[in-house]
Length: 211
Image 1 (tube, one colour):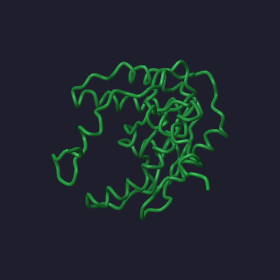
Image 2 (cartoon, rainbow, N blue to C red):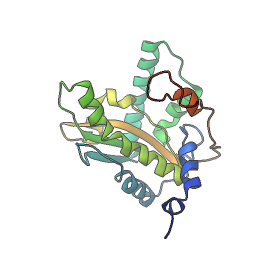
Image 3 (cartoon, rainbow, N blue to C red):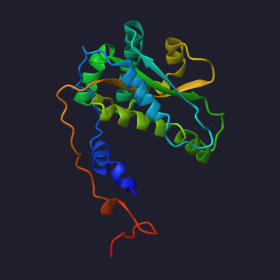
């Protein structure tokens, strides 16, 4: 009888999960994406675990230059507002992405039906927790195919403008936008992160999981 772990090729799965970085600069802006590959990735994303909302996700792939230009201008304006409001300096990699965002081969929006107003915190967590795993699975599926992406949510603050550009129906919202392109010279490796033993507690907050 086969071992399920062997069927999963565990080292490969761990490697994809451990090296899924935000790719903002080392992208091939001139190479068109294979639409079949993108649809394969969305097929995988649609297998993500979901809660009570069910398969409420929808995906919009944007490749049309005029729409990308309008979305890029909007994104840059929101980023500038965010920087001034928070008093933070935009990373050089983020600046590099914004400067060429209109040239990105594709933008993938993860959308869903708008949540009811007045949701309690627990309900909001359940709602978004039923959608966002699909976006993360999409990012990992892209990573496994050497397609770079980065998780962005700034355009979620401009629902009406984005809906107009994309022709979205009423009561539908955008949650995540992934700018995507084939990677070009990107070196993907594990990041320096705190080990599990320093960020994990056993049974009660502050208690080490190790003796």
